[in-house]
Length: 432
Image (cartoon, rainbow, N blue to C red; front, side, top):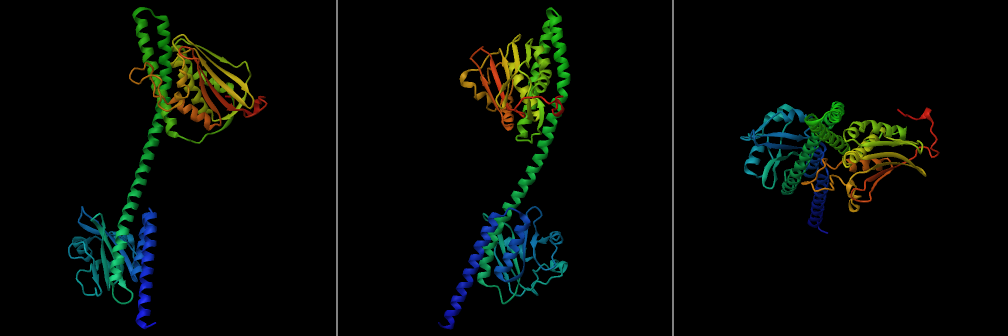
């Protein structure tokens, strides 16, 4: 093999090596959305592929019509310090590259007036040679990629071609990383705003319940004790208060919906204590509609391991549903039904019932049995969806049964027993 053949083989191997490295760079750039490590990687790739001492990236600020260093790996460089030095569009090599959208190759930059000496002086660096190419996205120039100080010889056509490929890859990768960072920042702000909104809903709904309970109580009393026009006015106040109660419950349900799979805080509690608390919470609403309410604990009490607050919310949602869909003067019963390894809590009403084809659909989010334009019952359709999700998060089940229109409904919650014997140990159970 002649010397020329050896040189040709060597050159082909070198070019193949560069192409392979450019392919590796492309894969890494397209899989990295962290801006800082991305910039470091680009600078290292520039130096490796072109055999340069340093590389730099300058981004174009259209508003100020100047360039700013986004990254550089020049020895002793402070990225923060470089970023504070604007590079003018007029009279600088980087500016010329942006204006003319063409590469600039300088094999001897020692006396070239276009070299922006302020940068060299600020970092105690000397630019001896420079290869700069435009960075563009869909024909729009966004900056300049530079290789500085060729370690040996002069810049080659291969160097120029490789830099153009790197610049194209880098422009897209940097834009993706910047957009990703902007998106993360926006999501963080949204998270903060969402927490503020959730906290407000929790506080507002809690603070509104107490005065509303008083209004419901007095309005119900006035309606019973008054006659004629006064009784009618009391009825209007009562109906408005009931509507307000529905809105508050929707706020509470919306809050739990937004919390999603919020952590549950488990504790051993008596089922009877949970039911008694739910009865107390619903009393003013039951009284306002003149319902008969019965809490049946004749089958005994049992212990479950649950999040007291979340299960209380579930019971209140189901009871609200029973009160809302039971005509005035109806009957609502809540009882405990013991089962092997489970405790069933049932809420039975004498209300309007549920069509057979709706027994599962009522647990869908925002589902309403009535048409939304003609329905006579208020609500967003969140309560039962959240209730089932919360019960399932406790390892339990929730379903509904009904014989049909005006035949009432039965909602059953099945929860695992914490103690299979069902024997109550007051010293170990929080029964408050």
